[in-house]
Image 1 (cartoon, rainbow, N blue to C red):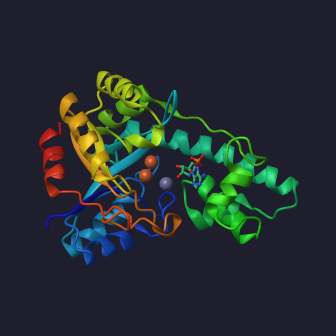
Image 2 (tube, rainbow, N blue to C red):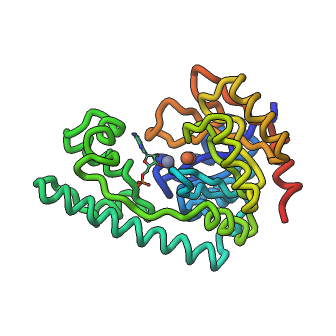
Length: 280
Ligand code: AMP
Ligand code: ZN
Ligand code: FE
Ligand code: FE
């Protein structure tokens, strides 16, 4: 069985396994290939590629770009050149924006007497720090029972420690990926709470901007949901992709390459083959 996983996070963003650990887990589980798709960074790829070379696993350089179009939308990019100067420049800008937002969140917590040092967080969590990391700190401080409880009570929009950050537009995200030689793909289409007409509107808009694929197989999606998405992808001539959105202990219900216990994920190697055939 030729199984792959095209949606994987590492410690380079908010996963809890390092790129090398993810690669060795993928190899143990008999996956043929994985794509590293950290949020707004490609900094995990080099370590993953190095570890994979020794194990004979294929690692595809990818990214998951946080995007705003009406609401939050995630755009995956595959086969991007991690050294593309434009990509590096834009991602650096996003990290700086995040840093400024995070400093404000840490300062808000400090005014409430919480000992949250953003400097320490950077040392511990690496270059791309997000609210999930703040959630972990709040759990460690005993203020929340879990990261999602921390979101609900402190860091979700509307809560006392929430601060907004900026996002790329759909146009900017897709052109960022294409400019770095990559293929742009709509991630987890059911996450945006759009009905059929709303999803089609998003797909048409994405296609008009150069989006070429859609994630049809995803952790927790039922066979009926997957069949619906695959039919949509075919109707619009989109490449089909799939992946677990593995985050290690940040999302403990999701297993690398296998998804959730309720809906076992299977992403066929053919999906990767089709992506490769589309590479510019
Ligand atoms: P940030 O980009 O730093 O604002 O953080 C956003 C990330 O937080 C998203 O990509 C999600 O992975 C995570 N997130 C958002 N809402 C929740 C929630 N209610 N519980 C757990 N994680 C969440
Ligand atoms: Zn994440
Ligand atoms: Fe996502
Ligand atoms: Fe993801």
